[in-house]
Amino acid sequence: MNLDEKSLFLDAMEDVKPLKDCNSSQWLKPVKEKVVQKPDTLQLDNFLTTGFLEIIPLNTLLEFKREGLQNGVLDKLRLGKYKQEASLNLIRQPVEQCRQLLFAYIQEAKKDGLRNLLIVHGKGREDKSHANIVRSYVARWLAEFDEVQAFCSAMPHHGGSGACYVALKKSDQAKVENWERHAKRSR
Image (cartoon, helix red, strand yellow):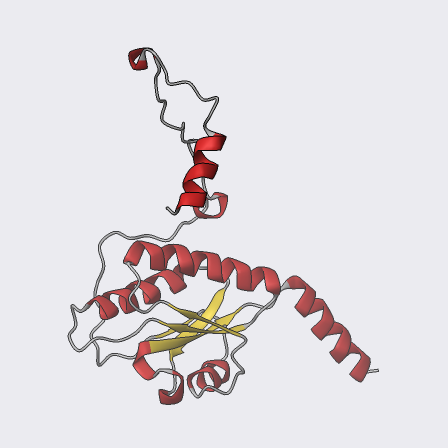
């Protein structure tokens, strides 16, 4: 502090009086506002199970098809012929977070009318690696969704056995649009 600053300080503090009894003054800590966590209403409806898991061996490709779905649809899905409209990356995520993310992702995709998705779950070198556990859970969870028509392991350029293609059912709006488009052709 130079001389000018010191004199300015002393001038500013000229009428300040020291406290006589310091014991009577209390310094209160600022009160922190408690953050009330609101429950995630989307996750309250989450029906995906995390119980006993049968681990799918690494050399087994993921594949699932609902009854009534044509084999050609699964073949095209397996070959990556459907354009992927969205993707979800679950690599290095804890299992519970994967469960929550997958549930929210499928619900959002259904709401947005998406049909073809890519889920990247990763792959490990051993059957009991974390990535393979997540992979096995993803296979179980996808089959639990009524909206999922089929899923299978992805092509190598989309992640191979570390990812899977998912085909969702058409939304009611898409069914109506499809019907109208094909009905106009038949007239």
